[in-house]
Length: 465
Image 1 (tube, rainbow, N blue to C red):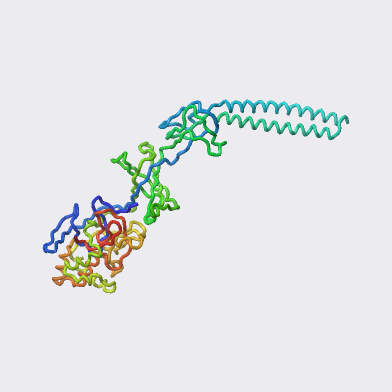
Image 2 (tube, rainbow, N blue to C red):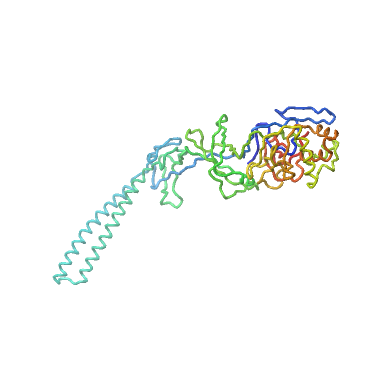
């Protein structure tokens, strides 16, 4: 499963202490630096409505699916349903040759008649023996024998009645009916085929039909263990299928199964998404793309992904700006005063932007906008990105957003409006410097959170090409 922030062209993100003008990207305003010898192209960061989603693939299947089998063995004489048929519960689907069960029924009926006759005779013999015992014609032992015969006759009558009841049930079993209302998915037998009983055969018997209720469908998809913590039962999911490319189907997470599966050395957890299919558009076996909404924000500062310089590229960028490459990493102990000076200057140059803080354990990678501490997003694994505002926990941690290019920041330094150390602090903040914390990972390619996390979990960096 891939997790990303998307706005179909830009990724949203939290501003660091400074969000500088970003590199050229589709939909961004392009500004060419006055000092063209630097070869730097910039683009303006923009406020956009953004969504954090988790994406995966799966296969549609009905929630309720059954195999229809026969309790009776024998040859199939009639088939009344075929694949694709809609049937109601109790609808006759097939009929098995009833001769065997009819014979068993007739035998049970005859046995019952015999048992009833024996019961009547034994009862009369017992009464006669009682009279003879009273007349001292027979002994007590002979009378007791007559009582035993009567008791055996009673037991035989009970057995005969039970056998007849069973024979009656077996006689009805030759007619196979639909166990529920639904659709016949498969017909697995043909006329004249001999089938085995499901109750009398150790192999489970012969399956005649497979049917399902298609009103309720589900998608079983697999989510990487690193992303499972962001999901919960009840979250909204959007499902797309190839058969209907122009529409989406809304579902909801039913459950996240507790047992993990290992696929190609990657630990995955099954996630079940339920769908209402009373319209009958979705079919079992369709391949589905599932997009689960984790979080969404309005007015989020967005920058192009290709506008970010990786930490390993920081030294070459510093040389272009006339900075000392070895001094681009600033110790935390001196970070606070430098950032305070930089913020004071930038607050006088740029307007404020709405506050947006990261949701703990929610959408990873959201940092703070102007007026709030930068947050790197709890819950991500170490080493999966260092997004969020670099000024967190440092003298209040407020971040100011601007559309300054690196050349303009250098001009501020050369004009004495900010110190050289402050300029280096700004560039280090743009590169995700300072005390980095785990941030978002898996963002869509070509988009970037300002001062934050690159798609795929790369650390944030200075916004320059």
